[in-house]
Image (cartoon, rainbow, N blue to C red; front, top):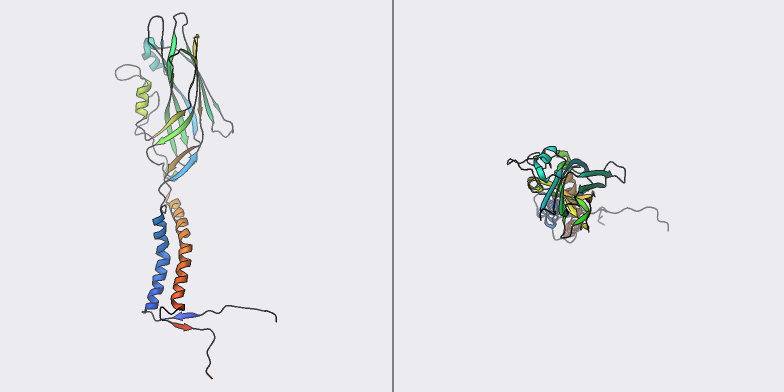
Length: 315
C-alpha cells in the first residue's frame, strides 16, 4: 500500500452568542491578552526606566592648572608655594608664588580621536641652599569632558590629585582613572544635551576671591561639587620618592577608559523593550490557555454543538 496524501480533520464547536460557552471564549481571549502583561509586570522590568550604557568620553586639557605645595625651609617650619596657569591668580599669590614648569600631552593608541591617556609633568624648583623641603602637594587640572554617542553631556571638569609624606620628596608619580558621577540618570540622546551645572563653571573661573585673596583648591572643588554631573579621578596609590633635590617633579597620568553609567531610555526604546518582555510571557501563557480552552469543549464541561466533518448517514 502506498501513502499518497493525508490531511487533518477539523472538528468545530458551535454555540449561541449569549451562552456559557461564548462567555468562556471571550474570557479566554481576554486572558490571552491581559495575563502576559500582568505576568511581565509582576516579574518586574516591563517598563524600563534606566539602562546601563558604556562610552569612552572625549577628554581634553583646558590648560588650566593649579599647584599648591607645602614644605619647610631654613627660615620657617611651614612654607606655602603655589602656581597656576592664570596670571591674575599668580599676581594674587604674592610671596607664595613659585613658578613651575608644566608639560602636557595626549596619547591616542587607537588613533580614533579619543585619547586613552593624558600625561602631565610638573616641575617645581626648590632652593637647596635655603634648605627647602617639599612635604605635600596637590594639583587641580581643568579638563573638557564630552559624551556624544550614548547621550549628550559636556563638562568643564576640575580634577584633583594630592600626595603627602613626612619625608621630603623629590618625585611624585600618580596614575588615576577618569570616572563620571551623576545624581540623576542621563537623558536620552534625542532629548538633547543637559547642563551639568546650575551655572557655567570651570576650574579657574574666579581666580581672586571677593576678599582679595587668591582662590585655592578648596574653593574650586566646593563650587564644582554643586554640579549634578561631575568628572572625578579614581587614583591608584601614589609613588612618593623621598629625597633632597633642586626641584620637585610630579608625573601624573590620567587614564580615560570606557565609563559605565545609566540613562533613561527614549519613548520608542521603552516600547521596544516592553514588547520583548510582553512577547516572552505571551507565548507560554497563550499555549497553556489554548490547551485549557480546548479541553473545556472536548470533555463536555461547557455545553456546545459539535460539527464533525464526516456526515453521519442513517440506514
